[in-house]
Image (cartoon, rainbow, N blue to C red; front, side):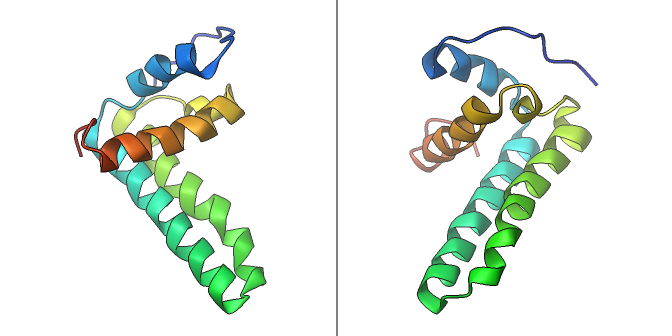
Length: 105
């Protein structure tokens, strides 16, 4: 596994290219996309049906799929371990970029 070099990013704009470099494997990106989609579907279900106990599943859905992608396909340490907030934002920006066709899916 490759390690993430510890660098201090002053803003998300400078972090995002690094984030993308940690998601070059298409299967890793697809697993992120699946996890993020499941979060949206589950959150929608929870809000419509007031199924509040299901909220605890959201981190497992999102991070479970993402971490499988990193550990088994990308073979690197998830950026979330070093940059939790930028990484969370990166997940959703990458999701949007995949939906918009800016990133290969």
